[in-house]
Length: 221
Image (cartoon, rainbow, N blue to C red):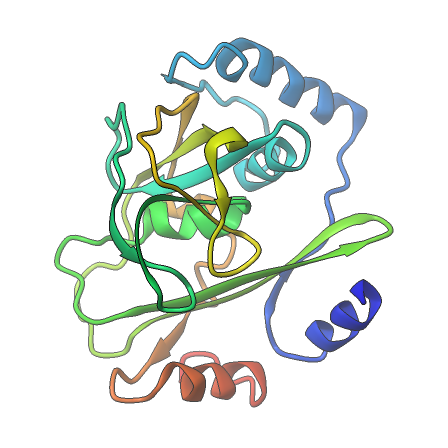
């Protein structure tokens, strides 16, 4: 099934992140950061000095340390409380949301929500391979929005223990209050697909806009 999924996803025009391939030195750096800032769960800010992109660090944690991530424009959240939101499938729930993907959460951390007009359309899909986890994305913003799109943001690292899967595999929800284990500052430059975000017409359906990008490869359509 995984092989068939990869075959299908590779033939669509998703943005793609290959499986993690980290040097021993990078793994050592990541383990030291985990031990220093995350393991004890005190909620502090991670001092990130590695030359490896931050989304690789986040995905390493997700794949190896039993954590999830949440991206926000707000840098001082000490407790996440459940609130009314919609799953990827459209179902309404009252919950704290998180994801098992560092790139997806970086998008939400760095897209400027204040003053934004219209919908954000996005998706994250993953497939297991012999080398690890291959990740696929779709990101689109409203074509009519004229203001600044990007801002600095924060990724909150949360324990996976109290979460369950939401509408899709990499969407997670918790119906209780959640305290972050740690947090990581990010900038628009940390979002690897910032130049490849599509633009959609608000009047078009989600399916229509995704069809344009994934089948016809009309980035910015």
